[in-house]
Length: 260
Image 1 (cartoon, rainbow, N blue to C red):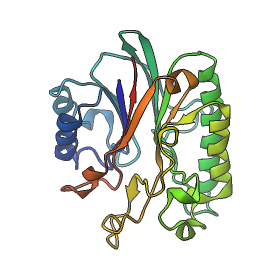
Image 2 (cartoon, one colour):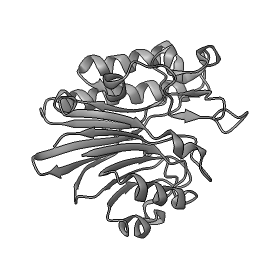
Image 3 (tube, one colour):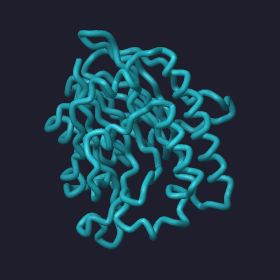
Image 4 (cartoon, helix red, strand yellow):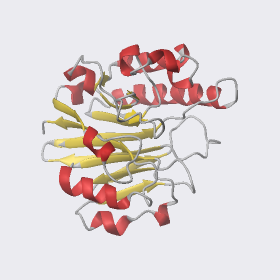
């Protein structure tokens, strides 16, 4: 099973780029973030025409997440538990069957948190605390779990071309990075780092100042695997070429292959 995470940065604006990538890469499961549309506005027909089943948790104009799967699946949850007052569409969870059991996939779009010093940063940290609590609960199921998405976290200096440029950013604050480490300490494995210790591996490049051409990027998109999923991990690919195409997102897909 090939599971991808991809912040599409507006699915309606980039539907042609998305469908072209789906035809080429043929992932089994795709977790999309920042679809930036209500559920009714999602281009479901174009995706279903490629053989995918679709579930969305949308929001007008910003945020929004979706799961695409070649296999029919059941949505277990829309919205991250822990705060009934939170109306931002940032989490969807599904159970996807395989020939040998099932894989639980949580698709998340973690808050950016900027500017630090505003209410946005405490919201980010509180959201990460809720994610930690839910991730811990999922481990009690003792099943393959993949928590995929745009985490808006730069875990280590090697995950940025110029870490010094991010020291005042919410993505690189000690509190943010510490909460990401707590998630790993629960027992979740960063799929990419399980397969490579290389530097220069990024998933986001700003649109400004020729960042992509200079490889001035950061790594903020992750697939975090429960022990049962990590035991099945075969390889991870950052599909960097997608960033150089027409009308690209500022993120690129990351694809993990798990043995059935």
